[in-house]
Length: 485
Ligand code: NAD
Image (cartoon, rainbow, N blue to C red; front, top):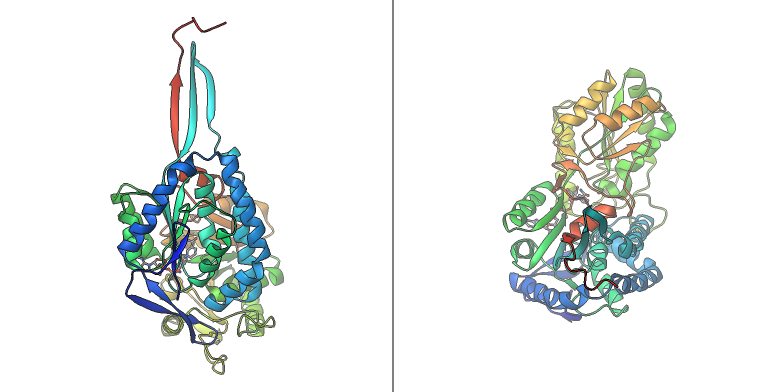
């Protein structure tokens, strides 16, 4: 049974109920995840609060020594971590491995905290008066994670939180809690002081308790937009810092001058990678002009059926299953809605995988998608390629900007001026130029806009220092001359 990790010890959850953890490639239960209670949260926050004083007073250069040890330990266990990610989430082992390596890169960047956390100093802001700013940790922070990147997403936050002197409570998705059991076992090997990192399992009750607990200073959330809004409003009304990353609907624009073969391959990989379960996955490919639309349709129709689908543990498979039967049903409903609203299926992935156990859907390509259609507005989170045509580049940009979501967008072109205009005018804040998944690296910040992000300080990179520290301004002068030798 999965357990919580509080104050350096594994302890059973106080929750009386649990949910199944299922390997989505087989449909078989692997384990059960307890649904914790507000008392579980109180225990963990209490431990984190108790550890805060000593941890805050540990010099940053000493704090990051634990992160250096973590890097070594995690690097020695990449395969084990990746295997767990594939087992509980379904993505292919190579995708899982890449996500674990991205997680470790967060540690790399967080080890720079002694430099990032330095304050500022100005001499003589007035005659004989100096001003100093210091960046101080604030106390207990919490992280609430989604199912789609069991290892990577929590690492967007906690390494930066603890490197800057805060203590932490993590709540993974109850659908994929296994990877973080191992993460915490590995953290134990580094000798990190007890209570600095704590783990609590559960669902809504645990989330609400974290967002309302008086000793939690701030919350980082990643998940669907309705829950992101709930977390944002609940935390704000309880006086907490909050960064809540939500869902997405990502557009990829193809201009007539794009390098077509590479652009289509890149767009397809963006849409079907991790079975489409990425917040940066492309969704609607908007082609400008008839010619580019025809070319993209032909190439997608040829390439999409070539993707090998099956258990992510088998290296010959390029795409794994969806997370659950419910998710598959929801996506099948969306595909049907596209057909009912005038979309044309060019590649039908629905029946191609009937022989497989688990929750598979092969890449599906739908053409003649228009802005009013349900599929053009709802997040699909599955391997469905939507193809659309507009007459002008301005029309494409206007469509992107009318969408409620604004996470990422990509332009395929060889024109510098077109790329510059795109970057300047589109609402999404993570932009790719000929890049299908423009995921900012750990040393840049990550986050969307509109319904894809609630808050004002984004994840990792330099923004994390702002989120996890409070700035103190000290204005000082010395009134007596008597101590000057
Ligand atoms: P989700 O919103 O269902 O769950 C996220 C977390 O919220 C989980 O820990 C879950 O336990 C908790 N939760 C679920 N329902 C809740 C409720 N009613 N009240 C309180 N807490 C609740 O999201 P998911 O299905 O696990 O993840 C997929 C979503 O995450 C997609 O929408 C995807 O776009 C988004 N996502 C966004 C980013 C980003 O950077 N913007 C990154 C990854 C995933």
